Amino acid sequence: MLTSFERLIMTSPSPTSVGMSRRVALGATGAGVLAALTACASDIRPLADGSASNSTSGSASASASASASASPSASASASPSASSGKHYKGLVKFDNFEKNGEYVPATATHKAQNVPKPLVPANMNEQNVDGIYAFVGYWLASSNYLLMTGDTEPLQKVESADSLQNYQNLTVAYENNAGWLYGVDSPMTLELLSDSPQKISGSRTRYDWLAYMNYSADMKIHIEGSPDEPFMEDSSRELTKVSVEYKDGKWIMVSSEDGSSATDSAGGSSSV
Image 1: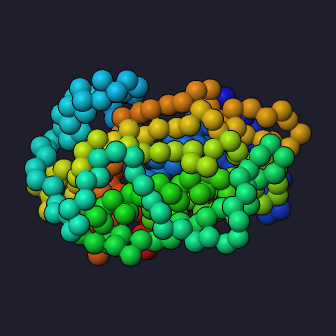
Image 2 (image 1 turned 90 degrees about the vertical axis):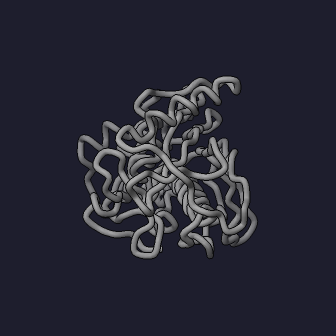
């Protein structure tokens, strides 16, 4: 993976002179920022057994093996009811955006203009499959919006303030026209491997949803004063697990490491 994103952040002028820790700076590669997004969302991350095959024929076997490793200490049981009865297997779709003016995609000479902003779906807090799907779709759309604009505002609805500190310098880069991404409208896509998530036994409100997280190789990075480069060397498709829990009237991401919510471990709570 290339380190062009690290250069973008480290060369970004900061009017507030906000520093960045060595850990964050060294991890701010193209792969690193995408990993940071999935880590901040807790368990939307690669499974322990590594990346899955890109072939279609391997999807079934990868899904089966992942099912066994997805919850080593608890077997999956029945999934929650879906109020609409929709089938959600496949690419996650999201179409609830606020549009302000004509969208102009980013190029090597200018950042994107009037990027449609994700809006919280009306059913995102419903305690059913539809609600989970809406929650995951909003998180994905907000993450892509962040990468294309540097704006964390939509993601604040589902992430803690501490988590979003990882992208402060990305925001500064966009604000100062020091660098931006271009070449693709949606850097990340998520492909669900089943129509509904599986409930974790022993929990009334926690569910896992196996999926592939796809990262586009068409994404490029422009840094003022430097040659443009690919954001990543090639496309990446990783087998992941989306873990969610219904708590205090809303869905939250949970960590597979300790079973706690992402917002709890961050020392705060997100609002939707």
